[in-house]
Image (cartoon, rainbow, N blue to C red; front, side, top):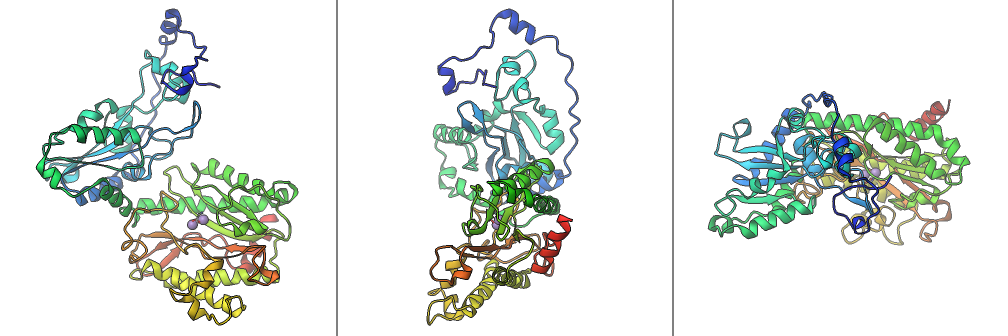
Length: 509
Ligand code: GLY
Ligand code: MN
Ligand code: MN
């Protein structure tokens, strides 16, 4: 199916369109339609929570107009777009997920103190491209936005009902953004989401008359980006419920993969059997995968982000599966299990696996409110360094203690990645948060992050005895910090080697 649209694109330079343009055709196709069915939109359960998130963001940047674009459709090739995914800051602040809504822009307008949303000093408006009427050319001719091509989008009323936010036509955006810029209002935009909106903001700033107060204001777009990212460090109860859902759907996907292992072993690209089994489950039960599935068998497991997934799967291999279901609200799990394809670990596989598991358990031991995020990593590293020393793998004269010093770190040859990252709407969530709130930050109830130590011995790693070469193990769980410790959200997926073997046997019947 090709693009018969009217929106200018490179493809329009050569006119391959065969859509009729006769008046008779246009008159006919734009008439004779019944009423549109009611989409049955009801308020999202997230409405009070997203309102609280917006209020907390606005409190940090008083007096500024905050612009949070959903983003635009991205070209995949020529006239074909990727499936739309809104920017995570937009999803967080509106509660909109799945493919909602290309080109929409959330704006938090500054208003007189106490007169804004919830008695605050900001009023939120969502500027959206509403559904075009059936007598417009967009209706039948616009392959990007037209109802004939991509289906009916929500009306302005639907958007307000769903989100609890006033919705207005995106055509009003320019004037709304420009109001009082140059007369005391600072305009800040979340960058990296929608170039057209950023360009519009730049133009408004450039056109605004000089404004001493605004010029003296040191706050920048970066402050907004950072604040929106830091706002997600602690999840509210709706977010935690979504994380639980994402993890539960992910665990089901892992079970599906175990069922598919005989098919994977039989196929010349067994890793693709693993990938597509998990990804099909993610599409069926959620929105999609939260990141490209890593289906790494044998030596491929030593490549941290192996997503080519075109290798064979052999009976004696370990299969490292790192995968997460992203639910419709766009929260994602991020779970890894390293499974013996045969159903039973060999002695050396079990030795490496147990070391990684002990490192993970040590990290779980320390994860509670009040400790630093980095302490979790350090707990895991003490175990990894100790095991490597015990196995005689650290260089001569290097003890585990020496390796653990900042000047040492030799053990990291076999685990170059970190132990943990925040998790939520982005698989690597809160990435723009300041270091003193993230790595150096203190754990608080409601934080969700991964614990994912690993050991990776490449096939040509001459620093380790041959028996270790080609073995890669990672165990990754999703952790919620609670009032007095933590909860392993992915605990229902077995981790202990004996439990993994039992579970695999059960799955295979
Ligand atoms: N799946 C990527 C990661 O574990 O961070
Ligand atoms: Mn991870
Ligand atoms: Mn992962």
